[in-house]
Length: 175
Image (cartoon, rainbow, N blue to C red):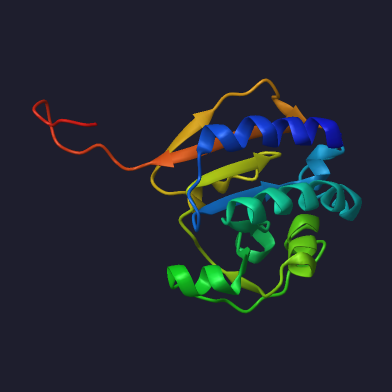
């Protein structure tokens, strides 16, 4: 699976073209990746396999990663303190756990240099592994990205970037 994940990241990052300081939202059901129903088989091993290569790319590009937890923590996200400061995010008090947040948030909490939980964010792009519904944490106009990989393990894979709203009417001009 590591080779497929690298292939996903290789296809994803050039298409989203994130600028330094922008936010990538990750939602990941490790249960779905291993073929179980969401929330029924959280796997720290899968999180340990997927998070490091993504963090390496995030650090290389100078962007922020926001890792969404499950509904048991109201889909709160783990982010770096610097992201909270830059975007003036509202901090919430909850610690991610294996069955209240999920394996990926637990691993993010362990691997981020200064992790903080926030309730909401407006990310510039997103990776959704296992239909975790990250759309609530993306900027309003999310555009799906199609790549050669449709699933990661047994989990459905959805990728997106965002763009500003197009406003105006028939005489409006867009570049």
